[in-house]
Structures are given as C-alpha cells and as structure tokens.
Image 1: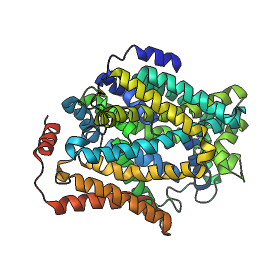
Image 2: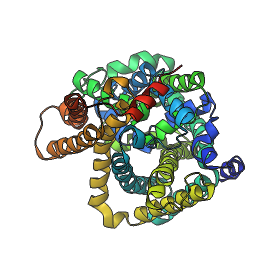
Image 3: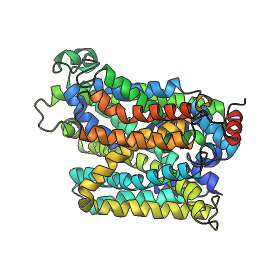
Image 4: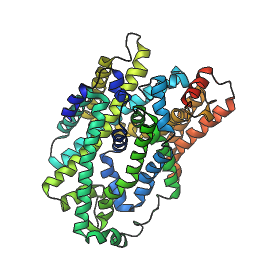
Length: 469
C-alpha cells in the first residue's frame, strides 16, 4: 500500500488529479473501487451473524438490492455525476449544491457530513484494531496507529489514484480469501453436491428468501435506501463516477459494480450460510466467520483471510477520507477564507493529512467516546438518507421547483423521523428502517411542489446543460 502511495504521488499535478484522478479513471478500476468501497469488515461480523441466524435472506435484502439499485440506474445518475465534472468542473460531490440551491444549504450538508464522518472513520480504525487484537494480540492503540498510519501516508501521498489502486489490490486479496473459504467448506462437507444438499440441513427458515423480520417490505425499504446510497448518496461512491472520463466508461463502471454485488456475495456468503451445519449451537453468531476460518484453514491461509478483512475496512476508510478532504478543500475552506485556493495540491494534501490525523486521535480515545461514538455513528446512518434526497433528486428536472427550503426541510424532517424511530416503538422493522428516508423524500417533494415559485435561471441553465447530449 505504501509503495502504491509513492507510485501515485507522481501522478498528481493538481487537485483535480488528487481528488478525481484527472477525470481519467478506467471503467474497470472505477467499478471495482465502487464495489469494494461499499462494504467493510463489518460484513464478516454483523452480516455473518445474520447469515448464521437467518440464512440466505441477508443476500436478498442487502447485496441483491444494492446490485439491482445500481444496475437500473447505470445510465442515469453515474452519467449525471460524470457530466457535473465535465460541464461544471466539480471535484467534490457537494460542489454543485451552491448553484442548485444556495450557499447555506451546501454548507449545512457539508459541515454535517464532515463532522459525523470524523467519528465514523475513527470508529472504523478502532474496529480494525479490535480485529487485529483478536487474531494477533496486538494492543488496540498499536493496531489503530498501524492501520491509521499506513493509510495516512498512502492517501496523503497519492490521493484518489492511491485509493483506487489499493482498492484493486485489496479486492484481489478478498477474492483469493473468499474462494479459499468457499472451497474449504465444500471439501469439509460433501464436495460439489453441497451446493444443492446444504439447504435441507440448515435450521428452519434459513433457506427462505424472506425470513422474519427480514420480510418483502424490509427488502423493498432497503432497495430504496440502497438505490440512493449507492448512486451517490454515499459521497465516496459518487466520486468514482465523477472521476470517469466518458459516458460509456461510467456506465460500464456502474454495471461492473452492480454485477459484482449480484454474483460475488453468493460465493463470499456461502461459508457463512453453511456455518450452522459446521458450527452448531455457536454461542456468539458474530464470531462465525472467524471460527470457520480457524476450523477449516491452515495458519498461512488464516493470515490471508485476516488480510482480507483488514483490507476491506481500510478500503472503505481511505475512500471516505479522500472524498471528505475534497469537501473540506473545495466547499468549506474557500468560504472561510479567500486566501485558500480550492485547486491547490498543497491544500489538498494538507487537509487530507490533518483530517486523517484527527480521525486517528478520535480512534485512540475510543474508550472515552464509548456511547458517544455509537450515538454519532447511528446519527450518521440517519443522515445518509436525508442528505441523499436533495443531493440526487436535485439533479432531476421533475424536481426543479424544489429549492433551498425543500432541501433544508427534508434533511430536518428526516432527522426528526429518525429521533421518532429511536423513541417510539414501531412494530415493523421495514417501517423503522425506511421512515427517515421516506419522510425526507415526501417533505422534499411536498415543499417543492407547494412552493410553485419561479425556478431560478441558474438552476434551469444548470439542468439544461446536464441533459444536453
């Protein structure tokens, strides 16, 4: 990773190279990076537990909905993100909001996202350290400094080029580890016939597509959430599309990521689905993947799987940092001081270094933040949806009358709905999960339609330029 950072250092001549790879990101690299940046080591802990207790339903409400959400929009939002860079020269996903709404709306969304990501990324460093501690015995502070320190250097050196090339390297490691585990499970059970015989031996309900409380309604709610999140609601994923050189390339990148989500988790999750047969009556289902690794693999291959878990989390973390640094450099600092030039490569590297260092400091204080970190992470989860609504719908001409009032009120309404779900018992898990996003969406649409005000000329011009062939 450090070597890749040094290599990428020489590919950066200005902030455009640093934040959006000069708009020259190849489709295959963009697609793989988009895919790898979409999930972390939590998949092998939290989702492994759900695979153990609820079976294949986790694939259908998680990976399947993401894949479909990306593929159905492959010719829409990815293309619009790419055009925003070409037509309006954006390098940050929030840069266009100043023209689409106003400066206050842009700053509200930028500051909210940056402050919450500070704690979110800090918590991810701590989670990597816990992973290393379980397998190797390295203390948590040392684990945080090792993982954070390596990332600090290669991201600061190489910018987006370093992030996407390391994403590719990490995907290869994940691919090898996943295939090794898949084959190990087949060999330990009945060989290839396990692919068909396994499902009869699983606990009741584990072979069902929808297993309470993960119902059809829950899957549809997640489809809506993932549609917005993976088409740019998560800022780091929007950056992959912004960095593409052409419409053809960005569509191919989106399709590659979408198909990877549909196909790869079937192999990746198979050992987790087989875990109840291999490890019956496991006390803590979240440890199922780790226990399977130790049960089935020799030491060297256990190391490969650990590297895979480590790489997954670092991939998501470094991807977030690069995009947040772009938001700070392009959207926040120039509005605080006119002396700061948004196109400065020196500013880009300095901001990346300082922000990454701050996330490491937060991680080192994880014991003191305890519940606070947990609270802020859940608030960040709540913000993804409400912020994604004005971000993505603002690019669609149908919602041209939705101005700053609609954008701000939708974010606030989504947050209030989130508070409601935390304080009022809601029977349906589908409603509980989707309510903040649905309220945000309905508020944005209603306020925009009721206003019926004249659409500002700058908004009309922007939208017409985006939709020109």
